[in-house]
Amino acid sequence: MEEQRTNALPAGGMADRDAGAPPQLDRRQLFLALAGVLLCILVSAIDQTIVGTALPRIIAELNGFDRYSWVVTAYLLTATCVIPIAGKVSDQLGRKPILVFGVIVFVLGSALCGRAVTMNELIIFRGLQGIGAGALQSGAFASIGDLFTPAERGRWQGVIAATFGLASVFGPSLGGWITDNPGWRWVFYVNLPVGAIALITLLLGFPATGSRGRNRRIDWFGVATIVAAVVPLLIAMTWAGSSYPWGSPQVIGALALSLVMFVAFALIEARVSEPLLPLDLFRNQIFSAAFLASMFVGPLLLGLGVYLPLFVQGVLHQSATSSGAVITPLTLGVVVTNIAGGQIVSRTGHYQRVAIVGLAICTVGVLLALGMGANTDNFSLVRNMVIIGLGLGFVLPDYTVAVQNALPYNRLGVVTSSVQFSRSIGSTVGISVMGTIVANVYASSFAKAQSPALKRVLDAAAASHHTIPSDPQVLVNPDVQHKILAGFQTFLGPQGGQKIYDQFVAAVSGSLLDGVHASFIALLVMAIAAFVATLFLKEIPLRTTIASTDKDASASEHVPAAPLVVE
Image (cartoon, rainbow, N blue to C red; front, side, top):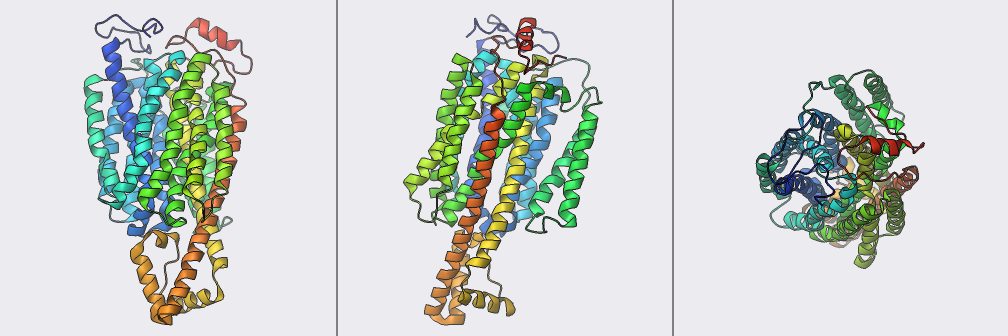
């Protein structure tokens, strides 16, 4: 490895370097730096895989099915806004300050989430957690570009995949066990010791990297406008069809404000000297295709992680531990092909072909998932998740490798964070849209699924001011179920109450299945869109140096479809 790394030094200390040059590390320093990066990825990965399993129980305790998706959306919203900021700042100040900041804020947010007593508190604290996660994601993935050449990065994706896989494989099952035993609050508290170890490793072992040039201006107008664009967009997606009709002034107004702010953001980025998201990057076809494809890939894994536990616990009536065990094959499949795909990309350089094969496999898996119902057995469920996971594992690292290889080293942070930003905003909007779809389809299906007898009982209960909870959270809350059954039996007697209760549970469960099926259709559309975008991801030879050279730039510029943009 040392022969390929043209920036490596003999054993010794870090050498002085020009502004914007990659860090020069010996083997020991490289090991410590990589350990810090992997721990940061581990901290973020544990949270992403462990919380989804606990969500049905959380909403049952805090009474907030109407805000189910916002527990995830708030996290994604702040992470999305922070990612491009962190990427730009890391190019100016270095990766280490960004990573340290991210760990501290993430751990603080985790502690507060564990102490939340209302859904609104949990949503706010998840937003704080997302700020830290955004800094971690941006800094960690850009750091890999500092440490390894494009030709090496595919191979080292195996190490990164193993770290993410450690959390992904055990996270869902651990989340289910924690939820069923110590309680859901500990799914947040578990981040504290891991975060502390990551912070110590960063402070002691991670080198100062990034530009040390004089120009450290931050595009604050860009920051303000991108936040002002994303927030109303997500609010509109959450309101639409549930709180307000799609054509209501509230939804239309929020969408209009978002559009105006996105236009303002583009105008600002075209004029400032240090843009948050340089628009000239989009003249590079590789960057444009990767940016668009990442936006559609983002919701695939996260959407399944959020709504599959609801399907398993609410429709199949299994425990939180069981729902976590079902997600494990999905994440295990991701790990296996992430490692295999990284090796293939490093040896062949064909990142586009690997991504296309992965998306094709993923699409087949989502099609199979659409066939799942109340009688689905665990074998079919696991088979479908394995197929989807195997497909996604081939795809996830490819877009980052492609853009880091296509653009100059002095834009490493902003290029990497831009792809992460695209994936994050796609995940954020996708989860919001899926939440709206599930809520709307559920409400419509539940109204149609009520038998005349059940409808009369529910109407009579409402008229006497004894409203019976009818959202899917009743399926995962035994205490609420017992109260509803007791209420029916009080009105109709033991046998009549039991009969109506069974009809009630069947209507709720069947309506939830309709909502989840609709969300899976949305995932299928996203997988197909990502496949189409990836067809435009042109391939150029992977560089064998960390920093771009004139020779590399010249080779890239001979690809007319993907002209290299050089500052």
